Image (cartoon, rainbow, N blue to C red; front, side, top):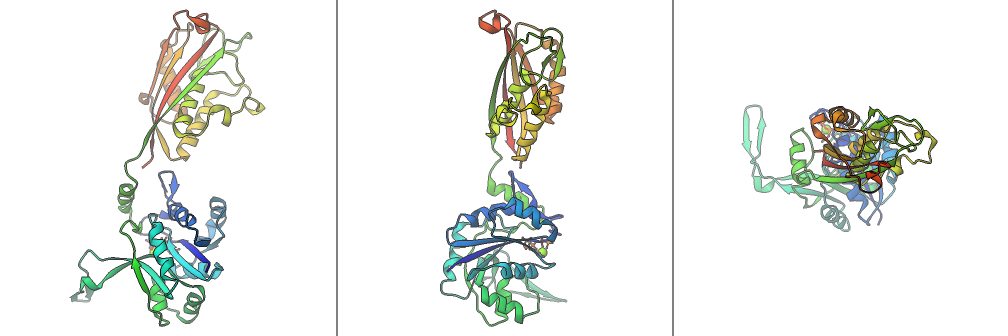
Length: 372
Ligand code: CTP
Ligand code: MG
């Protein structure tokens, strides 16, 4: 029996203060956490997303392997209905995109339950005492008989369509809807980790489940010979007197090393991959453009640059007299403050090619941290 998984992501997130499903958490939009988990389950033969009407195209682009992306409605129930209508498999699971940490085990229990039951949903015991308040009447409900409903919730596609057809009332979950046409839901164990991100405070719980943000380090190295024409000397985005270096771009050896260090910290390849020296676009280009672009890629991958440290190896020119200007220039290109950039210089003690002033080399180390 084929199974469709439908991710509901068409809410407005009013209690959160914005569409929480689009929030980028550790470099991944929130909706993608559950999406990737559903994708990894072999029994799921179709996967669809329900989103805002104005975000359908963006989602088709972001989730190219989704079997369908459809526009949701003004209520969760209406969004679910549109998803079910777009599905084609015999069994359908509906899941809140705002529940990022659904496990394969919980999904497996729902699918297994559907082999015999008509409707199955994940739920967890209630830990708080729940009171029913009607006007001035307050009644204490027996906690041992209460459960809190989660998703996924699943049923047969034809039963869901029948329920949508026959019941006009709105419900906050599929089980309540199916109960109206006489179907008794079978409940399976959910998981406290499968909570729904509802208010901004829930992000603290999210961070708790993801653990402390990771820190990584990257190394960059570059070397350029002196040019035989009269090009200007650029080091760290700052102009120096005297002969310049030869290279395809402005040959800023220090910025190239720094660029490689931040790309390396995140595993994004190297400068040659992003700015090939065979591409005429980069001929004579300012290397600060490369560095800014690399820093943007690093941020898009969900990392912030915490610190940069670099050493230039050169017999000439004297570099440290412009160290502060270099720190400012690098900090500017990367989008961090100058106190997070360190620049040092050394001669090569007249040893080897660098010692004979045939060129200049630079090393850089970048420290990056996962965004919360
Ligand atoms: N949802 C939906 N279509 C709607 C309303 C909700 O697809 N018209 C989705 C949400 O995107 C979310 C899930 O249903 O993944 C659970 O709903 P809820 O937590 O209530 O999210 P929102 O409706 O976005 O939040 P709020 O009620 O605070 O506005
Ligand atoms: Mg809602």
